[in-house]
Length: 306
Ligand SMILES: Nc1ncnc2c1ncn2[C@@H]1O[C@H](COP(=O)(O)OP(=O)(O)OP(=O)(O)O)[C@@H](O)[C@H]1O
Image 1 (tube, rainbow, N blue to C red):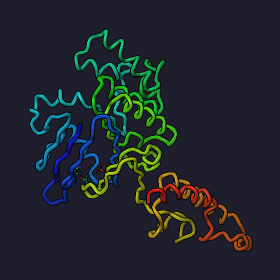
Image 2 (tube, rainbow, N blue to C red; image 1 turned 180 degrees about the horizontal axis):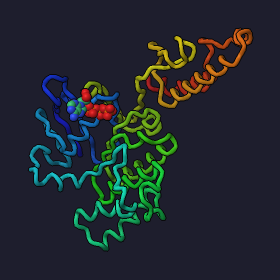
Image 3 (cartoon, rainbow, N blue to C red; image 1 turned 90 degrees about the vertical axis):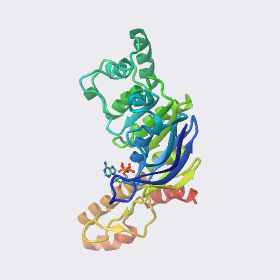
Image 4 (tube, rainbow, N blue to C red; image 1 turned 45 degrees about the vertical axis):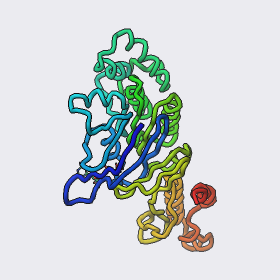
C-alpha cells in the first residue's frame, strides 16, 4: 500500500538529511506506529506520502502509484485516497460538527443525499451521535479530534495518516481516540500514526517503525517503544526536578508522570518536616520516591522488550 525505496530528502544543503535512505513497505490493512524523537523525520515521511514534498532520491509508491509521476493537476485527486489527522484538529471553527464533516464531501462534489446519509453514519462511528449541531469550541479536545477523524474518513480513504493525533489529549481521552483508530483499521483502512507516546504504542502492540536522524533504526511487528527521555529525580541538585539522572533507565510517559508526582510529593514533605524527623524517616535522594513500588511494577513493561 505504501512503499519507500531508498528515499532521502534534505531541507537544505547545509543540514543533514531529514530522511536518509529510508526503505519500508506497509501492506494494505496494516496499522503502523512511526516513532522516534523530535526531529527524527516522522512528519517528513508522512508529508512525502501525501506528496506535499517530492523526494530527490528514491521512489515512493502509494496504492500502486509512483508518487513522483502523479502530475500536479492530479495531486488533489491522489490525496482523496488518503485521510489525514493532525495533533491540532484543524477544524473550521465557524462550521458545526456536521458541516465540518459534510464539507469534506462537498469539495468532492458528492450529492446532498449521499452527504445526508453518510455524515450521521460517520459521526456515530466516532461516538459523536447527537453532537452534529455543535460548533468545535463547544466540544472537548477529544471530541474535536473525533470530528477531525470523522472528516478524514468520510470519503472512505484507503489510507489514514495520523500525525500525533493524541498529542494534545490526556491518557483516557487518548485511549478513546486509539479505539476509534483501531476500529477504522479493522474496517480495512491502512493506518500510519506518528507518535511520541510510548504508553499508547505499548498498549496497542502493533508494528513499530522507529526513525533516528532520518534513518529507520527498527521495524518490528507487535512491538513496544520506550522513548529515551531521562528520569528526573527528587533531591538531586539544588532544586527538586532540576537535575537529570543521565544513567537512568528510560521511562514511559506515564512512569515519568508518576516519578514527577512522587518527586514533588517528596519535596513537599521535605519542606514541611523538621530536620530531625526528616533524618529519621530517611527522606532523601535514595528513598525520595514513595511511588517506587508502582514504578517498579511498570518497569516490567520495559523489561518485556528485551
Ligand atoms: N520546513 C523545514 N525546513 C528546514 N528543516 C526542516 C523543516 N521541516 C523539518 N525540518 C528538519 O527536518 C528534520 C525532520 O523533521 P520532522 O518534522 O520530519 O521530524 P519529526 O520526527 O516529525 O519531529 P516532531 O516529532 O518534533 O514533529 C529535523 O531536523 C527538522 O529540523
